[in-house]
Figure 1: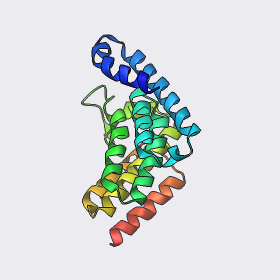
Figure 2: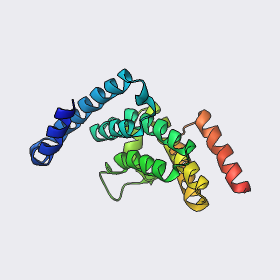
Figure 3: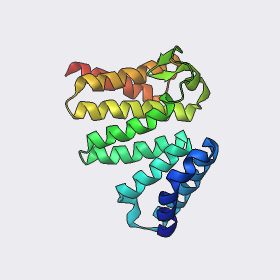
Figure 4: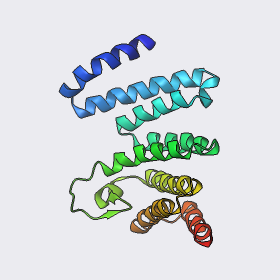
Length: 184
């Protein structure tokens, strides 16, 4: 496997420009699946951030928002427990950028920085992960003492949930988090 990764890394700058985007995404999907299998076979792989982040980047590049966002929430949460809030914010931004990069029209209405057409296209489970990521990002900023950026991230989650009339347990958690932040 290591031989494959080295050769792919050496050839990718030459191959990527001539490949269709769909094919590149498909390759990233296959690599993510292979790397996940390797992690599953190793006992220590569960706590290896480097391997998990590599899998995340391949899921993210493959366009599989659900897999990428779920893994970002898992890794980011573990990083936040270790006090690595800045790194978790970068991870959350990576997955959020996949949705903001697909905005077809610069004049299109956005909610929480995401185009209305994108919000209408994603499934409920993806929407839930989107809101969870925005809340986790707000929590990470708040933990770093940057209440303004934390409040912006939480407001962004509220904007998304309000746009799609999203109500679930995550919305209740969001309201409680806002209340706690505003009281401090």
